[in-house]
Amino acid sequence: MDAFNLLKADHRKVAELFEELEAANGKAKLQVFEQIKTELELHTHIEEKIFYPALEKPRETHDLTLEAYEEHDVVKKLLKELSKAKSATDEWEAQAKVLRENVEHHVEEEENELFPKAESALGEDKIEALGEQMAAEKERKQGRTATKSSGAKKSSGSKKSASKTKSASTAAKRARTSKKSAAKSGSKSSATKRSQSKKSAAKKR
Ligand SMILES: [Fe+2]
Image (cartoon, rainbow, N blue to C red; front, side, top):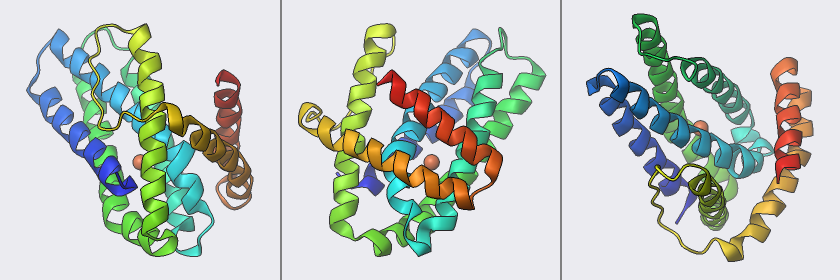
C-alpha cells in the first residue's frame, strides 16, 4: 500500500467518525469521541514517526511538514482537553467542533499540498516503502492497544507486521536525527517539546 492511500483511508475514517459524533447523543457522544481520539493518536503517531521525518529534508516539503507538526500539536492539545469531560456539555461540543475544523484543515492541506509535493520529492518507490512501514507500525501499535482495551475492535489491511518492525525502527532513528534539524528551523518551543516527546516515545519502545 502506498503511503498516500493509507493516510487517506485514515482521513476518511476519521471524517465518518466526526459525522457519527455529530449525530450521537449523551454518553454515546463520548464513546464516539474516544474512537476519534484513538484513530487520531494512531494516525499522528505513524505520520510523525515515519512519514514526516522523510519529508523534513526535501526543500519542497520542508515548510509544510513543519507546519503539519504544529497542527498535530494543536490537535493533541484539544484531544487532551476533550478527553477530560464526563459529559458532553455545550462547551465540550464547541471544542469538539474546533477539533473537527482543525482536523479537516490539516487533512485538506496534507492531501492537496503536501502529498503532491511529497510524490515529486521522494518518488513512487519511496512512497510505497513509507506506506509499508506505516502499515507495520500501525499494526504493532494496534496489537499493543488491543491487549489493553478489549472492547475496541480493530481492522487493518496489511498482515505483514513482523517482517517490517526492523524498517520501522530504522525510521525511528531517522526521525530522531531529523528532529534536530527541525528544532533549528521550526518554532523553538514546540520543536523542543517534540524532540522531548520523541525521547520519551523512544524510551517506551
Ligand atoms: Fe497529519
